[in-house]
Structure formats: C-alpha cells, structure tokens
Length: 105
Image (cartoon, rainbow, N blue to C red; front, top):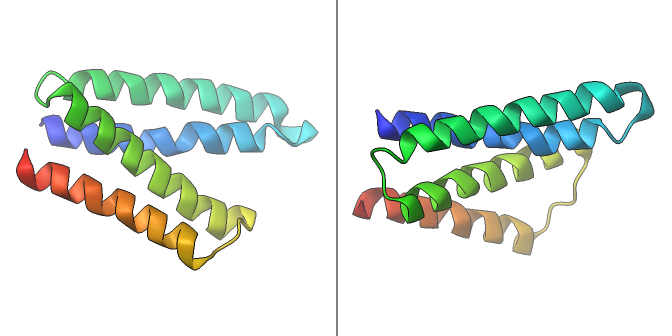
C-alpha cells in the first residue's frame, strides 16, 4: 500500500507547479494559487502515508522524481517548454534512478 500512496503523492506533486504556472495569468491567478496549495497539501499527506512503509530517502527521491518528470512532460505538452537532447536525457536519468530505487528497496 505504501507504494500506491507514494505514486499518488508523486502524481499530485505535479499539480502544484502547474497551479503556480496557471496563477501567472491574471484571469486564473486565484484558481491557480488555490489549486497549488491544495495539491501541495494532498501530495504531502500522501507522502506522509507512504513513509509509514517506505524509508524516507527512497520515498522522497521517488516523490520528487515523479513530480519532476511529470511536470517536465506537462511543460512540454501544454506550455511549450523547450525540448532538447540534454533535457530529455536528464529526465530519463531521473526516471532511471527512480526505477533503481524501487528495484533495490
């Protein structure tokens, strides 16, 4: 159950940077800020639940890895963030690190 909590926490972690990005536009400032704060709280709560079963270092690395890779993908898909070999390689290394942590847990 801990890994399910951790995956959910990581997916929710993607939401708060997106909320902050949404808040950049005046018409969605408050919606974005409220979204960011709510998702940050939910993500932290799920991480707390996951850490009851998974070591803190592993949980934190996986949580931030899912959040970083997911936010990277959303930035490219919806916000026109640049794509380059180096940026993609960096995210693939993060994902590879998360996989190694899971396999060696």
